[in-house]
Image 1 (cartoon, rainbow, N blue to C red):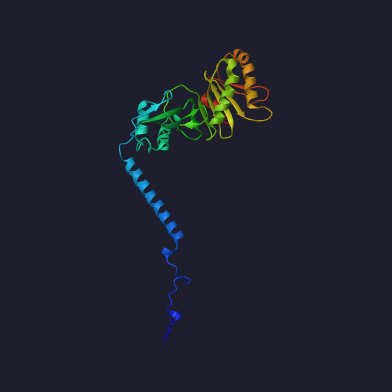
Image 2: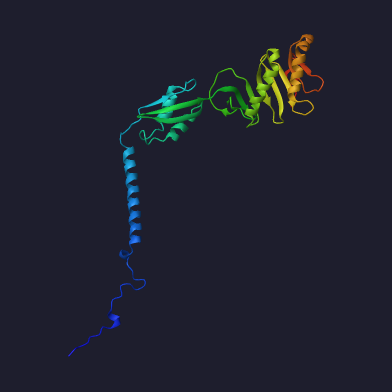
Length: 272
């Protein structure tokens, strides 16, 4: 006799029912997770290695070589600035920190820092070149103006012309000083002081003490034309006056007014 056995459908295992697939049955996901873990471990190892490497005396920096001639900036200042910020070794030192430290020195305008294999830094310094003293209007602080018309703070005892004017106009005064100096040159004099008032009125002083009131710019009589007229007429005028002159007011269209030097101080100046 043949016996037939039947198995209920409910007892048959269902390995691939929807939603029952396990992590180990998804190779793509496993590959992605393993990649993430591998890269994470590599990053942690690299960070740990660099931290360890930066604290070890491998490839130490032994010197800083200045490639540009030094005038105002001393070797002691450079050494102090670099020593205070250098951290790590030849590969890990932060060059931007060294550059910024050097540019904090009073007479350094710009600095460039590079590595020189195997144990040195190359330094290129652009020093400030002072052309005038600067006293902003309403401020007693004395600063300096460089050839780019920029204001910087540093100690100096060199004889330089003096500028005074509104904040932010140092470059404009430097340009006008060169212009006025060219106009004055035929007299054999130099402009030692140049002031620009808050109302934009110009006043200059020559190296013999003569003060020239130029006034404000206007289309009918530009400041330069007034000064040129003064230069053309001054040799003859000064010889005819016969007395020392303290102030020349050239704000007039057809001439200029003179103030003798012997008058009291409160009568010599005209407020702009």
